[in-house]
Length: 374
Image 1 (cartoon, one colour):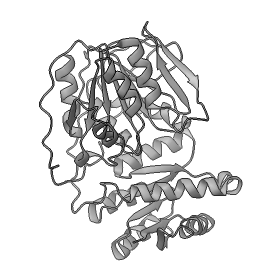
Image 2 (image 1 turned 120 degrees about the vertical axis):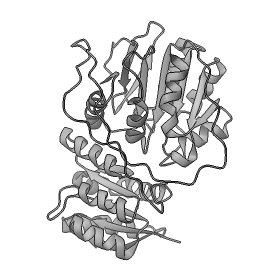
Image 3 (image 1 turned 90 degrees about the vertical axis):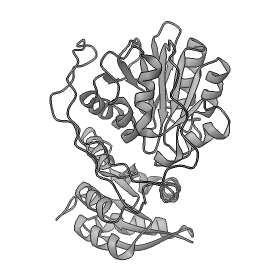
Image 4 (image 1 turned 180 degrees about the horizontal axis):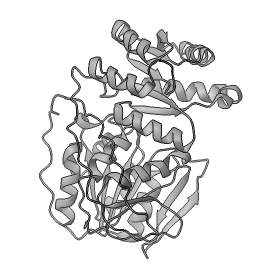
């Protein structure tokens, strides 16, 4: 059965072009269009699409407000279109907090210059997120989260802002997984915590990292599949929300306790035995920039059995081969469970390869990291 899609955008050209691209795929059916957020809500209720593509800037009601209403009334996977700017990144992160599953750059030049590449990417995204856990019978609103007390940090790392944090994205109410969660971890003197993720990752990382105390004793590296224009804004957002410090990694940064370094988009991040970070150009032969396998592999070489690696929600299998190297060196590998993943791809690859030492729900991962390291 074809995946039913509702296309929402105030630009007539973009609505038509997206509809044409999607309709050319026999596995996808465009069942309707809308020109603003209010129409999107009405059409979502009437047509019950499997996926909604959503613009942000629209008359009458913007895309983020529409996503919030849709998630409350008829939870549906939403793919946001965003501009590749710092402001576009901020808006997109707000949309993910509101409940959107994923995003794509809204680039008219790419549509004109590389139509086949755009078609392939857009259709793959639609088909993948149609199978996500975002469609559920009920959607639980989150409890308000108080801003954590700022932790003083050296000026080279950046201080925490005083603005109120955005609310964490609501997590759908789901039926518990059949497999029981792994037991609480045993404490170990880890020298590094490495976390890899993709689709659903921005919200998942926020959930995990906000549970860590300011005195967290291990350095942290984060690998999130994300465009170059987005990672700086994402790191700034996490830094405001978390008690630990978070920054976009730069070449030569030194790992230190209580600091999380986010791999920059479009590049690769490696770690050497001295605890220094190396940022390398993105290799066009690699699908992911940054790539979880690259960072995990370098951590395996530099830290042996002293790494706690965590693989969170995401499409594909990035992280599996890096986790294999870590496992061979004696390090610990955790995977997020299926029930709490937006997309059960990357964690599933870890579990199926029998590399997971533990499988935990998203809301338990942060506290278990603390138990394992402190």
